[in-house]
Amino acid sequence: MQKVPGVEVATRRCLNTERWGGSVVAMVVDAAFTSIGMNYFTAVVPKVEEFIKRYVETGSITGLKELSMTDPSELRRVWKNRRSWDAAIGIARHLSGTKMNDREALRDWAAHASLEKWESDPVGKVKGVGLVTFQYLRMMGGVDTVMPDKIVKRVINEILAAACMAPVEDDMEFIKKTEEMARESSYRPIDLCWMTWLVQPEGSRMRVNKYAAILPKI
Image 1 (tube, rainbow, N blue to C red):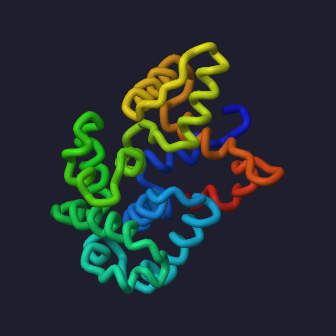
Image 2: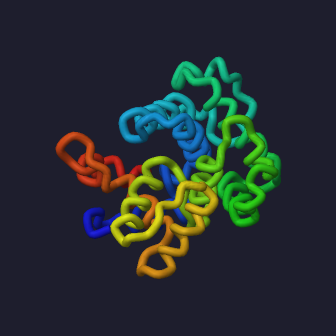
Image 3: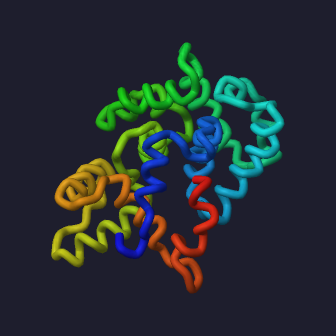
C-alpha cells in the first residue's frame, strides 16, 4: 500500500460513482470490456475513451437507455468483441428499466444486489457477466468490496503466503478473506483491490507511476 500513495482518491471516486466523469454508461462499457481479460490500461481505457468521444460527447448515446437500444453492429466499430457488447447492452437494459436516473439506478442495484445470490440476480444473469464483472459493477455502485480477478488473487495470495497462511482459490471465499484482511488493517477492501492493480510492474515502472495521467479519469 505504501507503494501506491493516493490510491484512496481513486477508490473514493469509484465508491462515489464518479469514474469517467460520472458517466454511468461509460462505467458499464468499461466493465463489459474488462470482462474479457485484456490489459486494462493499454486496451480497455483507450477504447472506453473512443466510445465516449464517438457516442457520448456527440450526444448519440448519453445514457443507459440509449445504449440498451443501440445495434451491436454499430458499436463494434469501437470494440470488436460481440460478447462485451451483449453484456453492456444487457446490463444497460436492466438498469435503465426504472424511473431512476443512471447513477441512482446503478447505486440502488448495487446496494440491494446479493453476493451470495449473484447468479440469480438480473445483472448476474446477463450473458457475459461473471462474478468478477458483477463485483466490479457493485464497486462502481458504491459497495466497498473486492473483485476476484487473477491479478487481485495473485497479489493477495502472495501476501497470505508471506504471512504463512494458506492461499484462497475459491472466488467466494477469496472475497470474504480479503474483506476480513481489510477489517484487520487500516484499509478498505476496495483499497486492497485497487492496490493490487496499481502495484503491478509494467516494463521498468509500476502502473501507479506509468499511468499517473490516466488515473484521474478512471
